[in-house]
Image (cartoon, rainbow, N blue to C red; front, side, top):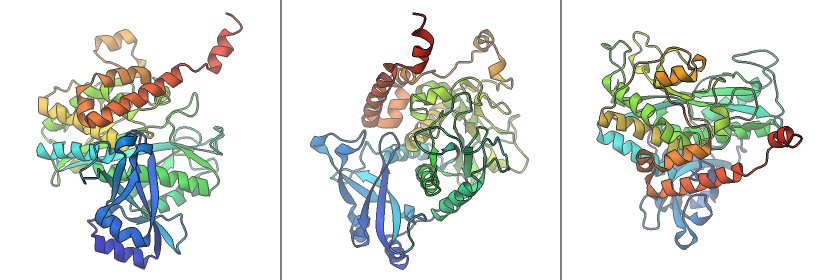
Length: 443
């Protein structure tokens, strides 16, 4: 991507006949917010940012102190490929500042930047991430009517979305996102397009861009794309398995040729940190009531807190090492879902790993058995815990967590917990079809 200067952006905008620039940022839940400026405002925006009212943004300020500044990051300037070429529309992702031009505590992008500062102080240069976002295509946003009955890697007329995926990949690449591969996923009408790994901040920007692009291109084709973690009962949900490694310069700090698992001490402590804090972080990486419908045994969802090399039922998988591929040594954190706020999720994941390094956590032996096949007694004997089975429980655990509070900062932490408690309460008091079907006639 390189560092683009303001002058380059102004020149580019002129050359590409850009008339509107959409300024993007996310609210506390990771929903993209956007307002547009015209080309005549661009120079001023790059210099001073644009003011807006933060009191209407979920998890931001109260009315009394609502003035905010959105300062666009020049490196995120891209033309929106689904808009007309003449009088084109570009977008830029913003950092949010307070009126006195300090980073705003409630900006999720700033939460991730703070985590990366901690990493740099500890002597690492990059936190590389490769998240795999799964999603479903439905005929519209009202019903879960599928487009195909394909399965994993299917290539048949069953995969009715091949053209859709193709157009989506072209659009993602036009937005500066490198794509490694795409395929049909396990569920009917379920798909995955994998981005090439990037450092954490770029990748979080890519994730929010990816979600917008997938939805926009689906809409152009007259269908609906959803990142809802579990839209279909009895079928795999959508996850966001995230491959991660720490680098010092161009050396992978996770690799050791002398270890039987080819994992360095740093990697072991990092993984141990994520396992130890997995339950506390759950409300962040699986932040919706629906997330916990995905996190159930079976369905390839990782509910058991353990690590392994081959076993996809474990929370963290370390793909086996291939000689000559030192740079590819990584840990795959399998519990996040694609409806999380990537800035907050990557920040808590990084903090948990760094905590493990700093405090010297010990990594237990890997568990290569399929954890779904063990009885509760066997799991208990092996000391294997499970993730929370509801958002309600996850929030109570997060609320007591020092590491989550440290990662999010007081402002985001307090507001996030408050919002999620409300969501859980609204959900908890619902009367479901299940209750009426099963209880009304017998009680």
